[in-house]
Length: 353
Ligand code: ISE
Image (cartoon, rainbow, N blue to C red; front, side, top):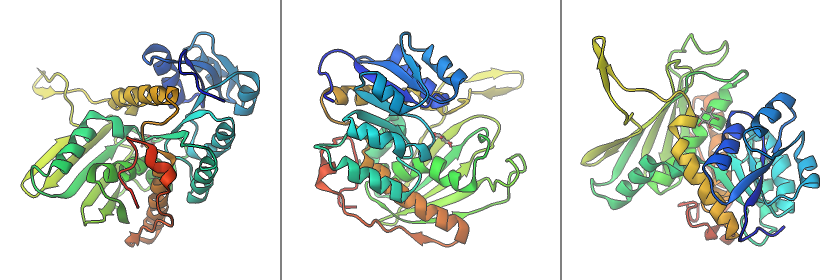
């Protein structure tokens, strides 16, 4: 299917949970050049509620039904990772522009199948929803690292805190669903690939659901020895916080701290904390989706590609092994970056990884 250079991109949103519904309202209210024509989810109440955010959108229980019934140019996939491949493969066959929420898929094998299928097309069609690459703070930090203004980067302290976890959040999901963001953004900021991963587990938070060993510390080592220490801590109760402190040879830079009004009252001062990733990264999601839409009109992608999704899945896989063993696990990328993936301007900095 060819993508229109004029007129709105006709988008299906697959998955009508929190993120899917957020994308429906984003496209309808803030994005130009696109409209949501279909919302897909087997949950009848959920799909109806999300479709109400986009007047005129039809609802479907499966992506196959939407593909058969409606002319589509593009799809946003906002289901859990293990359900991405069954949507991505037919969407590729139909030649749609694809924005897949992270992770690209739940296993390395599945990610490989996806990049193999994509390479049968003339050009990349898949952008992966690593929205932190569009966040102003990470972009400034990346420039600072590249500038060398404070000497070489030595280490990153990253905090990734969620108020609570959804039901059935497993220990491996700490890596594959949450730390996957740092696994993507650390190489993006540092400019080199991750070569090893190690996991340390401090005392357990008794407020975490039974059986979940939370928090954990994940050590990501890059090719030149930069160490990113990631505190993944997903039952903190008080709000959503993602911060990074970068330690250079002659300086320290911090991103992600609240920038809003500070109020002094009742004996203390304070600033608000975002309740969830929707608010913390709202501006980044808006930029990400607008750039994806603009790129789709031009027949390209403008952000992390399926190759980046594959690289992240290799590191996450090693991370799950490290979580179980307590050992430092080397990350081995089985493939070199195919020339096919060199065309995406805002994509990977890991040429040759
Ligand atoms: C969630 O799926 C996200 O992508 C959020 O950005 C992350 O902070 C959270 O831990 C994940 O579960």
